[in-house]
Length: 391
Image (cartoon, rainbow, N blue to C red; front, side, top):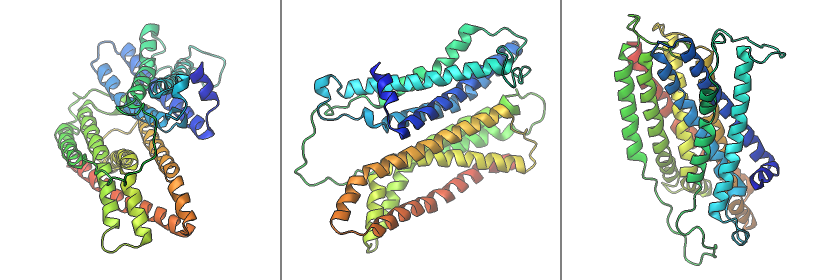
């Protein structure tokens, strides 16, 4: 009940984020139910498991977005005085997990209702039965299997939220004013691993998609007309996305160091210091956005090059929109959280006599630096990923 009350009384931005989590959960649940309907319509085919495996990508994106929204919820942050009421860090992590489960469960219910409506099982509304052929309306729906699939997102999202927000060693102690000088900002250590995973992902894509254009009829159709040989390409893209996510904080920190080099002024100092402070918070979702954008660019170049690849169907388009939407929403949430964390420092600078235009110029320089670095990186990764498919 406390988690429900906190959900009802949350900030409008937090409520909007939870509604987006519900929408992402609904989309992922609908894709899983579509994979179940394909298995019902083709019991002897071997593509049912591959279709379900394709759902791991939107599932991962949904869980990642749900954890990011729970982490940025002000109600989940430990504060002085709450521990005496029994709301310590562990209890707040549990409340965040319950709130995430409620949002995801709402999306799963919407997915089930929408799925039954398009199958024609629920009538009386517009477009009932509009996708009866695609969703195997002539086959009885196993309720236990459907409910099991719909429970995956709430269970995984709430578990991931509880693990991400669990109290670390020393967080239960009350906060005390700092008297010693601030320690140097830690340098993210994931850049070498990110580059290695990025290279591995591109190599896997090159190896796995070498047979995409065989045309011998041995490929298994996947959602939206994709072929089974592209499943290895999805695995390679997943490694590429993980590599970019690991390399993003290191690249962002490096951008901050470059801005502060060669006799910087006040604007460059503020911009560079801000990028270093927010390297992990901004860099990781920015790397994920780059991975999604590079995948979209590679897919567009592939279909536009006349390689014989099948056009994306509605389920593939839904999965792509879902993954891209979760990545962009996570980046936006990280940006809002970064701005909120800098509010006190900016207010102190203004009290000390800094001009507001200086702070705005520093923010613009941070954004421009990230665009200059990550946009060419996205284009390069997309070009390398699409190069083997054009041959």
